[in-house]
Image 1: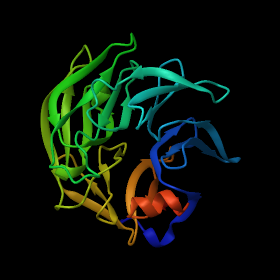
Image 2: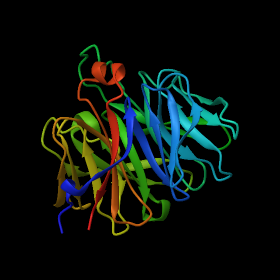
Image 3: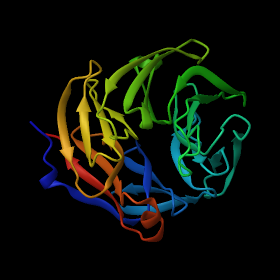
Image 4: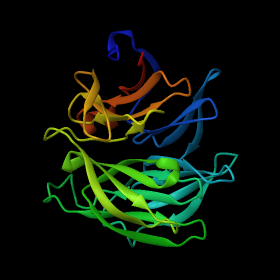
Length: 277
């Protein structure tokens, strides 16, 4: 049954630019890039977990439960303490040519972090970059496969495959993960129409990839073979990130004004809850 956007509800509102959606321990976690906060939404309401300098984006957890947040402008990973204070976990400034971006952390505590790769805001030509891996021992490594504006990532196949949305290549690429955590053998698996801008992806229990299209005003569900099996149209906004709740039947979708200057100035961003079946 197609996802019914007409039945959506608003899970969170008055945000500037929600990003980095994650589901953990029965709660929805997210960053507000221009608001500078990381928050948690549970049955008891929404609480700000931490204020993160330099525009927070991707989120993930180490095996010991420590929350990590990407600081885009600092080009760093920040560790969030129980009291909400943050400290630098990893400095990525020497390996990120432009702003850091989204992230996924695997079960071993290895963080895979994307970055812009080129000066998008200045209109620079599209240029490939690389994902950066931060190991639990603090080692910061540049992964060999080239990617264009690597954005949302998920890890599947029991930890052996990473999927990454390449925003300005309009595709989702999968690559293998070696025993040491290294990435190799990149394989484009989803090709989207030009200008779609795939962003923070999510994967269902049966392996379908939900791809929010930041500039396409929609989210599409695609198999790893490239077949589109569902679609949600959300007109008039940027569709920036999504995650599936633990019921398996609710897609949480982060939206904000298409114009980022407007998004930074007014808290018009929302997180929508859309029933999938």
